[in-house]
Amino acid sequence: MKLLLDENLSWRMIKKLTPFFAEVVHASELKIIQPANDISIWNYAKKNGFTIISKDDDFEKIVLLRKAPPKLIYLKTYNLDTRKLVDLIIESKDKIIEFINSDENDIFEIYSN
Image (cartoon, rainbow, N blue to C red; front, side):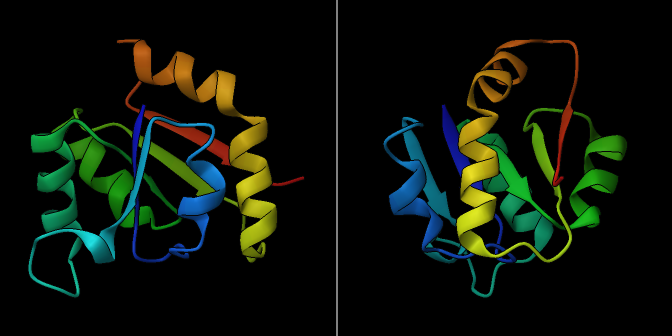
């Protein structure tokens, strides 16, 4: 599973998520004009087979207009700190893998408790 973390997420999440997912990159690392805008991130993810993880509702709008790929993991978690976000993603790993491998949905929402 290839995950692309949006700019609104910490790059520090990469190290903690890499043991659980095949490849994790942050938008700030992409070889595109920085700071990356949403459409540039979207196009990069589509071209390179990534699933986007974001807390930004703009990506939800893009998915609804353009359809997948790429798919979106939408974190509806308000102001959780980075560690808790990582924990939520890891706890959802099996569901994330199922979502990415399925053709049924374009958006997977993760909520905080």
